[in-house]
Image 1 (cartoon, rainbow, N blue to C red):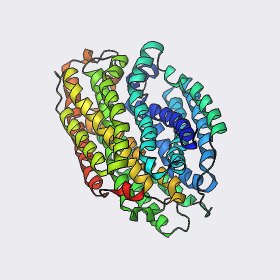
Image 2 (cartoon, rainbow, N blue to C red):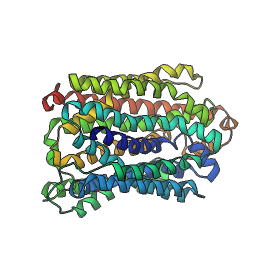
Image 3 (cartoon, helix red, strand yellow):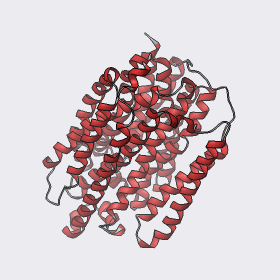
Image 4 (tube, helix red, strand yellow):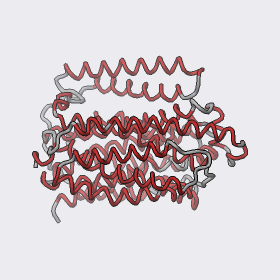
Length: 474
């Protein structure tokens, strides 16, 4: 078997597992909140902690992999992820579950950062779009399928089984990667590490995400939230200044001189900022307004997943032949249309009225993901693929992590934070009457509209990437 197929099979297991855990707790958040007695703050951070941990270390891991080798770090990532899953499965409090999700996230960052770089090293340029589409569609399929899978698992075995699932897969993946992968990439001869850059980036990003969470609590937490946001922006600005002057930067900002790299990453950031928040909103809507169980909620998202699985690989293969701009941009346009459609739901909207926009959202996302990733990864030199892959994933995770907090912040402009917490924790949200539900729907509509506008902005950089970037690099 050719090594590219071996690399694809191994890395796809890792990205699928990491993708599943990006979303697997979302549908189950109300169930976990009831079981552990958690409020909205804690329960959202069960999801946020995973994304934050898998984000803040990405640039450092990407830099390390360019120096010491991608396969070593990838193998270690499987082991760390498995340990985090085992800890999450025995959590007795929201705090310990959040800690366990951080461990999972660190392992996931090692897997995600290296998968695209390993495949780019192993695959001829003319086949890269197809290979990356299969791998990255596995991540997105995992992230979307996690929504359905979690509802079914919770309905049958309880929320702890969400994490039991990862343990045997993680053990298998660790051993398989150890015996089947080999180093074929080009290493960076500059081995100096930018620890100051890592500290400023990590601190700045963490403060920004915490600020979004605090601002969702209401007026009492507005001042601390604003202070944290300002401090986060200052630290990120310091990080950029340090990277420009560094001899061995954590993030080589010269990569932004490459139009395809810059445009693809900006489009991905904006798309991710809209995507996860909308998935969270839809899950809450189905369980609070439609009175769906977690299992019904997961099954209700199947139309989105089904079309995503079909469209994704097809879009990746066509982008190899015709270039990424048309498919990526059309995908963003369809996604925006679906998000604007969903922003019009009311208290009387039935599930069947949501099926068509969910299908459009799945088609649009499937069309966008693979061409965009292929465009980014082909545009950089071979010895910078580790950090390029890390930055690409960082943009996705930053958008996704901020998206959940932004969605909660937007919802709480219409419904008080405490009322929203009570709706989420209650065994029967309808016991509160229609007024809190109507307030939640008002918040849902506002949040969905803002997220739709953000996704629409991603069309601009997508159009700017160039019509035939991939063909020029083949």
